[in-house]
Amino acid sequence: KNQVEQSPQSLIILEGKNCTLQCNYTVSPFSNLRWYKQDTGRGPVSLTIMTFSENTKSNGRYTATLDADTKQSSLHITASQLSDSASYICVVSKGDNDMRFGAGTRLTVKP
Amino acid sequence: DTEVTQTPKHLVMGMTNKKSLKCEQHMGHRAMYWYKQKAKKPPELMFVYSYEKLSINESVPSRFSPECPNSSLLNLHLHALQPEDSALYLCASSPTPAKDSWNSPLHFGNGTRLTVT
Image (cartoon, rainbow over all chains, first blue to last red; front, side, top):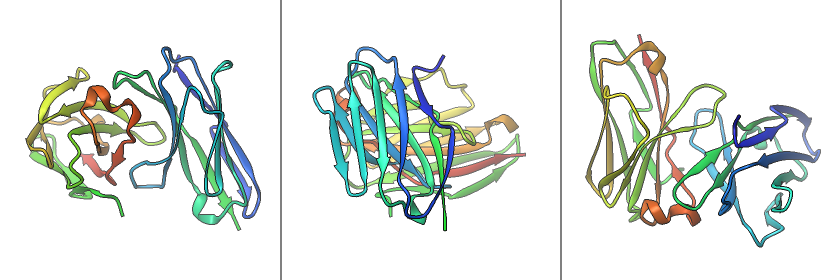
């Protein structure tokens, strides 16, 4: 069983709408959690990093939350744009160069 | 555009060919990585170089041979590959030595799309 589970697997929304992607993990020990955006045919790009003491962090229209007690994180996208169509990958680090990747959520934003 | 450059973007090779993938970064990063990514799957770690020394080999078959000639370059030499090795090969770098990279983002290249026929 993967130690980083993402849901949903895929999501289709209309341009301008908001959405929330989920990441649940069982990785231990926990060092930090990152959200990456991967456009088709390109490498992943880091969006946010969350450490144990952080509950929420924003990067433009992206807001990440972390509940270290329940081992859950979410990525909220506000006022979606067509360019938000991509895979969003949750990566949890154990702190020793051991990074566990989620399978990603494939987001499609339609006009 | 990404600061990690990978060449070629696409590569088609036969099972008896020998080819190399190249990766270059000029950000002064001291850790460099090779990942393999199959369609609709997350990247899987293959190799990690820290200060130009191989620090992690995730039990990768010997038909994949990494090389780090200097701190800016990372190669992946390919020989006698199988069709199931077809994938997107991603190079990444991070600022600090691999063992301390937990707090540094990975900077990925755009990958080489490899097809083995």
